[in-house]
Structure formats: C-alpha cells, structure tokens
Amino acid sequence: MNSFGFLKILVKLTAILFSVLLGLVFLYSAYTKLHPVIETFEFSFVELGIGNWYTAPIEARFMIGLELFIGLLLIANYKLKSFSLPLAAGVLLFFIVYLSIQIFVSGNEGNCGCFGEHLKMTPLQAILKNVLMLLLMVPVYFIQNNWQFKYNALFLSILGTSAVAVPFIINPVDYTYTSNNLQEKVNYPLELELLYHPEDSVKVEIPKVDLRTGKHVLAFLSLSCPHCRIAAKKFRLIKRNNPKLSIYFVLNGGKEKLPEFLKDTKAENIPYSFCLGKSFVQLASAQLPRIYYLDNSIVVKKVDYYELSQSDLESWMVEKTR
Image 1 (cartoon, one colour):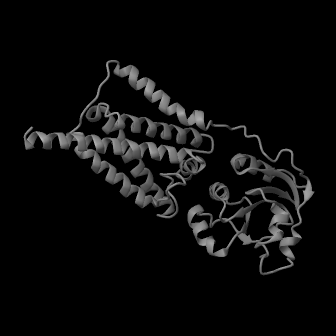
Image 2 (cartoon, rainbow, N blue to C red):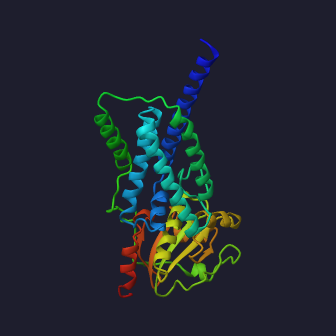
Image 3 (cartoon, one colour):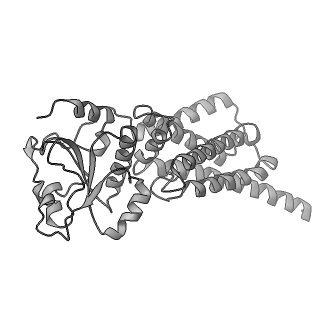
C-alpha cells in the first residue's frame, strides 16, 4: 500500500471517529438530561415561553428522545450526508437559537441544562460547544462512510420510535402525582414564633414578611440540597408568572453558599431569610425540601416540589381564609 492509500484510509477512519464521538456526545447529553432529574430541562421550556407546565414535560422528553436517535445514527454512520448529519445539525442550530433566547431573557447565568446537573455550563459555553460540534461535522460530511440497510424505512421507524419512547418509559409523564406527605398531619399551627422571636438571633433571621397572618407558601430549603434547588427553580418561574403569589424561602446552610445557590436557581425574586440549627429541624424536619401552605399560621397542606402546581396554588390563594 502506498502512502496515498494509507492517508486515504486514515482520513476515512478519522471521519468515522468524529462521527462516533459526536454520537456519544448526543447520547451523553440525553442521558444527563434524563438522569437523575429531568425537571431542570422541563423548566427551561416554561421559562422561555415555548411550553407551559403541562406541555413542557412532553416537549422535554421528545427532545431527549430525538438526541438519543441522532446519537445512535451517528455512531452507526447511517446515511450521514443525506440524513443523519443534516438532522444533527438542525438540532444543534435549534439549541443555539434556544440558548441565545435564554441569554436574552435571563442573561448568561446559571446552568443551561444541556448536560443536566452532571456538567454545569452557562448558555454561552453551551453555544460554543454546539458550534464546535458543527465544525466537527464538516469533515465527516465530506469524507463520510455511509452505511445503509436493506429496509431503510423499517430501520428508521423502529430506531426512531424506540429512541423517542425511551424517556417516556424511563421517566413517564405523570400529571396526577401522589404526594409522600398525604399521611402526614395537617391543620396544625406552625411554630412561627421560632422565627420571629428566636432564641439565637445569630442563627435565625427574622423573616422579611409577616408569615403569621394571611396565606403564604413557605418553603424550607437547604443550600446544598439538589432537590431544594429544583424546587427553588420551579418557585422562581411560578413567582415570575404570577408576582402576586406570596412565596417565602427559609434557608439553611452556610451563607457563603448563597451566591452560588442564587446563581444556579436565579431565585432572587423570592424573599428569604436564614434559619440554622435546631429551629430549622423543628419547623422543617429532616425531609427536604419542605413546602407548607400556610393559612393564618395553620399548615393546611404539604406538597412535594414535583407536585407543586401553579394553578392549584392560585386557586388556593383566592379561597376564603380560615
């Protein structure tokens, strides 16, 4: 074999390697959005106004399934020039536009959710990553090694349907959540005096609003708890959609962690105060996040963050107080 033939083989192998590498990035992106939590990705559709609380779970799972589909096609080197690469490029361009809108709406802050909670990236970093992937597609497009199958339509339909179905099977959309708190005691007064007349004013800050009268949603969050951060992101969107809702955070954790918490959740629109030590445990217990519906200091309802519904909250707020 002469040097030209060897170089030709090397170039083709490099194109195959780039295609497989791109496919693995798509698969990893889909996996990290789906596991361990999908809510962060769902919330982004609500935030940008391209979905609501009911459509966002479906849209998020469909996009994850599409990423799985593209990743498998690229790894298989299937009809790269005529099908797989144009589809992959289209999705990357969609995400570039999506991320650009995210920067315009919310700034280049926090985690864009492109790799879920596994690898945090700002929207601008994610755009640069997508541009790099598009550049890698160029040599693959011109030096592709296409694989085709005898039954192309059947292959695509089975692979595509299976890939899109996977997120819905692994993490089904459920609009009828069953709360973990249903068996817990409600209709009892919360010891809010622990917040307003604390034994230790260093560990407990007096809340910025009076939670003892009227209706409020009170959330006890830890700055280091990942599920608390998801709850904070959801509350931020609910508050943004309806600023009249009374939502308040009681935070636990080192205050040095607060800037990073706010940068990630962007929940600056919700008032908060700190409560450390035994008072926090007395009010919230050890299961976090802890979310109470308060009506004149009475705990009338407890919800998990994933069953928190803006429409239910709004309906409860307009009901007659106790």
